[in-house]
Amino acid sequence: MPARVAADPLPGIQRVDKLYLELLFRCNFRCGRCYHGSDLDRSEMVQLPQAVRALEYFSARFSCQQVCFLGGEPLLYPRLPELLAAAKGLGFSTQICTNAYKRRQVLTACLSYLDLLRVSLDGGTAETHDAIRRSGSFAAVFDTLDWANENRLPFGATCTLTAENIATVPGLARRLHELGARELILHRLRGVGNALETALKPVSWEHTRRLHTDLAELDLNGMYVNSHISLPRGGRRAVVSADFHRLPFKDTTFDAAIAAFCLYHASDPTTVIREISRYLHGRGVFIAVTKAADSYGELDELLAGLGLTAETSTRSSLYAAAHSANILPLAAPVLQIQQVLHAEHLFRFESLEHLAGYLMTTPKYAFSNAAGSDHRSLAEELRRRGCAIPVVASSTVSYLVGVPDA
Ligand SMILES: C[S@@+](CC[C@H](N)C(=O)[O-])C[C@H]1O[C@@H](n2cnc3c(N)ncnc32)[C@H](O)[C@@H]1O
Ligand code: SF4
Image (cartoon, rainbow, N blue to C red):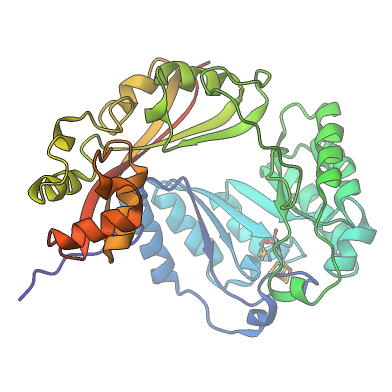
């Protein structure tokens, strides 16, 4: 009987910083763009022991130490104070994300176990917010924030951006800052659930750019705003062709850079990594992806066995300059390394044409004879020499994540 191997439920994930746990679907609101849509009518909910088991699992398996409870409306969850107490007992920093509509008794019962109250605000004016939520709900949120201040409960806000409310966000940021909010988290509208039915418009590139400029001009010292939120699809893009040892960008221009399957073509990979980190912001992320030096070694053996290219195995690896084993020492002088992951991949070539097409594109396999003149001739030659399919080749793909060294 084959051995049973426990599947890794989140392959490649080593650490989860924050867990968002939806406790129930029920809600006292029916917001015009709620992504839950008709699920808001479902009555089932996560049971307290299940929620605690999830916390224990994420803490033990992924070193997770922050949880945000939401739903539906978490203030309708019957055992919320007990759950928050259990989370605190497990060492979690706790948050709830709520519409903050009344329910003061429940909030009071949660007070001792809550590290941050996160309220949802859909604009900086009653007009924009109440149009999405319900009449009087904007004022109700600010009543709740006054209550939080009276009880010294730290709070922040979440705002989902739409074309209708984005111009009110700088005013909202100013008001929250004056009240002492810790953070304002901006979200993009997801076109699911009720958002499919309503006429709300997603923000444009120009809206977002203006918001970035307006927020940058405000003095929000002490309040975090994720003004780097990703820009809408269909925004401006530019294709630039340049030598990546010397890129034509100003310093600290970009939020993120990905160098995928290319560093091994560099004559000096560390110079390239330094050049790419130069144009990242201080909080920018750099991701490098490469392969193991001995990737596809099976193809070397196959070709040598068929007598096709005896010399291939003595040629240096295509990945010699930057591979799984040296990517860390190459990047370490330039980046603060956050994570390096290695994942095994298998490639199956189901036809000789597919295999020949791949071999033709790989400089390592420079076929000198007529068989290599095009991929059809090569497939024919492979067939003539008895190459069996499928052909399976393996490779380790390695991912390095780092931030520019300050
Ligand atoms: C589903 S609600 C649940 C918690 C709570 N009822 C509340 O409104 O804060 C969680 C967050 O998702 C946001 N949200 C709802 N529908 C959304 C959508 N279509 N796209 C993006 N965010 C959405 C809400 O504004 C809220 O900040
Ligand atoms: S966004 Fe929150 S408050 Fe509004 S309907 Fe959805 S779950 Fe309820």
